Image (cartoon, rainbow, N blue to C red):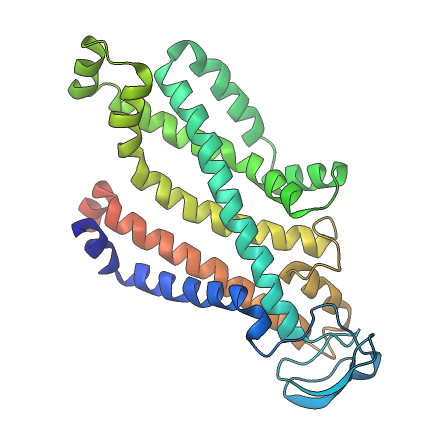
Length: 291
């Protein structure tokens, strides 16, 4: 409880949580935030400017008045609707990539740091993965796989695993030399018990901070993949393919690129600010340097 209050007293944490909560609310409540179907299109309502109220006729034949306060794209789709539904994809990919990278990276890091015989082999494997630029690695995997949310998550998570593994390995190597860990070893405590009770609790704080940076990076990479056309298919709205659809008409109708770009930047900034605040609060060494 004391640590929880200390975290919430940090201004960066409060700003990051507030912005992220707003985006999460927008994603979860998308169907009720004055939206229509994200795939509904009306060629007669194409390229409407923000703030336009017009009659909308979808492919089912239904006609109704709708206020397009973020305008429409070249196919007559509501930009606000596509942005809100795109938030679901971005946040889902970001959180899932962070969880997957932390889980597998922690496993490799603990094994490499605790079992010295496996350290060299695992770290060389991690170095090999880190030698390949993450975005190129993800593009290659997406070119080989069917474009689904799961394949996007895996393609983005794999390049992040070595960074987490090296972080956990360094923590394990440090903690393994502590007297209380050596005492537990001398008392014949089992390896899982030592790892669970003595090592992992000391890795929670840095992993929490690293997870926020992985999440922000994953959201950005997913947008890049969709923008390049190697991410999710165009019928699934994501901020990347919304901007890709509008880039050819950017000079005449910049709103189709600027609005999704704004929400993408806001999301990445919010998660990074949250990570900075958690680092400031949870990292004793950083607090000492800051003081």
